[in-house]
Length: 122
Image 1 (cartoon, helix red, strand yellow):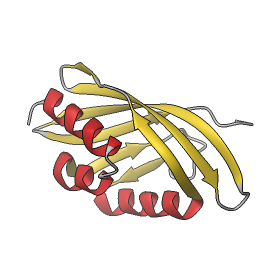
Image 2: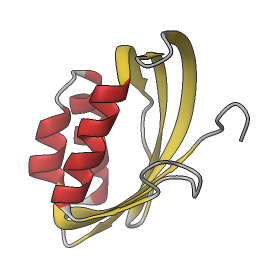
Image 3: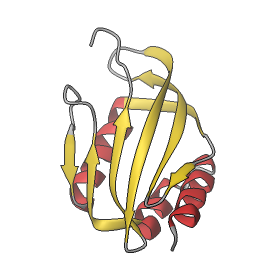
Image 4: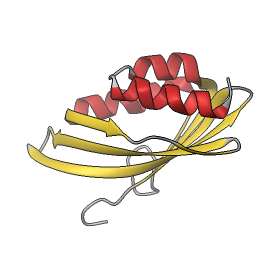
């Protein structure tokens, strides 16, 4: 798959709540996922580690809604904006947030994702 097709599928499937499909069809088994250095899962390598990060997210947040912007593509890279309405389960605090995700594509698969966002108090 070309980068534009991967980017379009990721946006469409995320907006439809088909996150597992993204991981199964678009991601390399050797995916590297990067969060800010202060985040709980700042670096996850491989699908098993990314899966554990996803489990942590599901156990920590109730997601009321997520929207994903149209992608911006440059060669083997693309970025999207995620807007989320979530409740932090331990505290019960509901908030809206946004983040930028940047993806790298090689050999028709996403090999790296990196998320950029601010956290209150960080």
